[in-house]
Image (cartoon, rainbow, N blue to C red; front, top):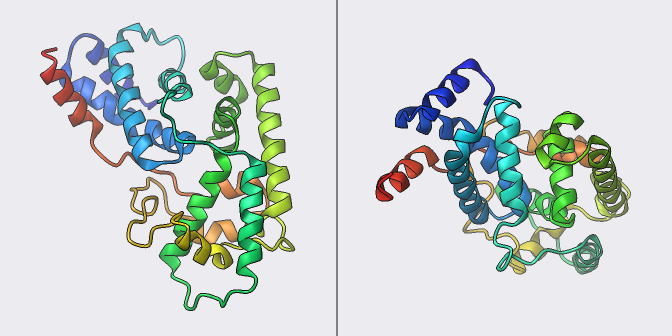
Length: 271
């Protein structure tokens, strides 16, 4: 979203070029979808939110004056939308205490169960993806956004603070709290972060399947397109901190061509 070609498309789109506008949408859609998925957890919610954000990008594009990086501006539009996405009907979110209790119960139940043999790598990978995403959802939305921007996307503090429209000191404080909560949870539960911990994805896979947390017939996260090499199988096992675990996950691409969807929407609106 930062090269000269994208900026040329932005300028042309601001002058009314529909083809350039579709190009702007396509340049932004992968980053917006990836952010939405990390924030919301559910691929279908993320797709809906991504489309909503991109419509806002299109309708607000005339207000972009180049005073910030285009990527910063798009993320700012996205974060405002994601903080309130489906506020009235949002999926229930949990807490670290609730998630920890559920994992403890699952570990206790799994301790007497026969091991699954052989372990299906696709199912196991889905369980890892689902579990890590579930941990993110334990952070409230403001702290989750700070954690995603600062720790997963590794944006500079000044840029992340500008996206969230808060002071850099406030962003640092928010990110520090989110880091502390995440690291404390991992250190007390996750077998990757602390090898002596009993929680292991392969041990809990039968529980996840029985509870419907992982659907063997519909691997929703594994089915998503990715932009970077999937490092999950070779990275997460060596990770020892929350940042390392989350950075080892795939970087997702938009599952559909939102540029074409936006074009259709604008045509139907007669715009």
